[in-house]
Image 1 (tube, one colour):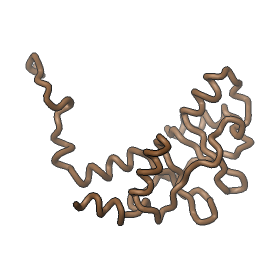
Image 2 (cartoon, one colour):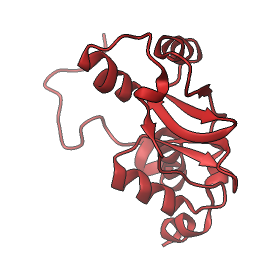
Image 3 (cartoon, one colour):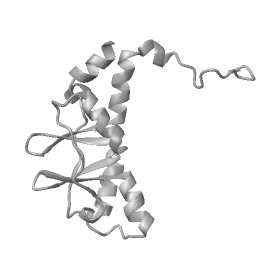
Image 4 (cartoon, one colour):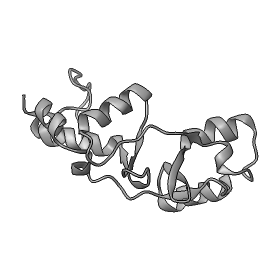
Length: 155
């Protein structure tokens, strides 16, 4: 099967991970939220001296800050997800998918051999990759397979 082989052979770099948005662990949560909104991203990579030490996601904001009634004036290092699971650009797409599936992650930091961020791999990139392998099957699916509308659509 072509897809199974490609998942093992193609590397994460083929998915063209997005450029990382970085913050320092000492920056305030409110600054991170502003950056997330202005850049329209759901994940920030938290670094110390250029090295990845954590990630801060929308889920962290909801569960570790707002959900616990904490102030937005605390350092991001206090509420980030420390020691995140990562992939390298050379890892296979299969490895990345397994890590995302196992941990329930929507984003994976892509790092170099010195643990410095080079990108962020999102579920969206993987879905697009899978769609490339089955374009006819994916693009021609009705919204709910097997359902028949009760009325005509349109005017």
